[in-house]
Structure formats: structure tokens, C-alpha cells
Image (cartoon, rainbow, N blue to C red; front, side, top):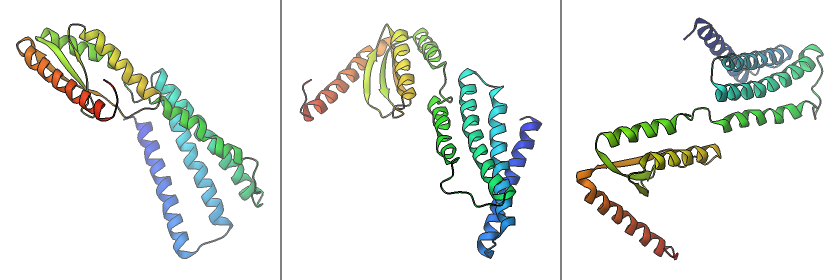
Amino acid sequence: MSERFKFGAVGLVCLVGIQATVSFVAFFLHWRGFGLAAFSDFMQCALLLFATLACLLNVQKTNQRARLFWSLMGLGLGSWLIYRMLWTYIEVVQRHEVPDPFTADAILFLHFVPMMAALALQPDIRQDGIAQSIQAITALRAAGYTRFLVYDNFGNYLETVGHDAAERFSDLNRYLLSHAIFGHRDIHYLDVCAFGAQDEDLAVQLRDYHRRQLDERIRQAGLQV
């Protein structure tokens, strides 16, 4: 962790602590007045400035997808900062009541748009999952495993993979990634049960058992197999 990051983190924690302490004391002591409003406005601007700078600093140190994530987050926070600065200028510098409705309120509502777009990118999803899965399956086949039963993260049987394991797992991982990208996060990973050549019969029996179970569920739902 760099010294710059440590300094920024300590500064941000101190600002949050000061804001929380003053708000707590003001609430219980019923403090009112211009000074408290000015302090609150400037403190909120400082917090948003710290958050915006933190996002912009991360833009330089990450891959392309993560850079877009931090850029969008910085845009959203920066827009919020502009709104707070306009509010502070009217309330503290001009010492006027902020009009209601306030024209800049549009910024307050729109600043969520780039932030939601950033979250939709889901930069935490590993982009090398397909290559890693193929490497793992190739290593298992080299160790003597020939048949693989695949389940989703709920334990539901999906399919049995044999000689074309690398190609099938490549397609399955693409399905997982596209599933997540389009906002469906119910299936996070796949479980695999590997069988060696000496256990082929057991693998076939287990596969047939799962198929019978699935067929029974389909019939109970009133559907045709």
C-alpha cells in the first residue's frame, strides 16, 4: 500500500469522523445557525472531493475495463460534487435560501446514471476464466480423468462432458460470463465431478439417475419430456 493511499485513507476517515461527531453533537444539543450549515456544506464538498480524486487516481493503475469503471464512478461523484458546490455557494457565500425547486437538482438525480453504468460493468469478474477452466480440464484429462458431470451452484445437474471437455467448458464459461454481464447473477459458478476411466460405469449410472430425476420433475410440472 503506497504512502499516498495511506495518507488519503487516513484523511478520508478523519473527515468522516469529524462530520459524524459534529452531526451527533448538533442533534442532541439542538445546535442551529449559519456556522453549522456552512461547516456541513464544506465538509460534504471535501468528502466528495476526496472520493472523486480517489476514483480518478485509480484510472491510471488498472486494466481497460476497470479504468472505465473508475472513470464512470468519478464522473458520478464529480457531478455530485458540482451540485454540492453550487448549493454551498448559494447558502454560504451568497447567504440566500436555496430555491425550491433548484435548477441544479437535475444533477442530483442524473449523477446516479454513470455510477449505475459503472456497477453494471462488474469489473470484479475475472476475464481469464475461460482459459483457466480449459487449463484445469486439460490437467485433469492428463491425470486420467475422462468424464465430467457438471452442476450449477445450486446443485442442479446440467450435463455430462466427455472427450470434447475443453470445447464444452469453454462454451459453459462464456455462458456464465454473458449471464452475469446481462445482470443475471443467480448462477455464479459451476461444480464439476470428475471420473477416471475405471469409473466410467459409475459416471454413466449417476448421469442416468440425474436424467430420471429431471424427467420426473418435468412430468410433475405437466410438461412433455
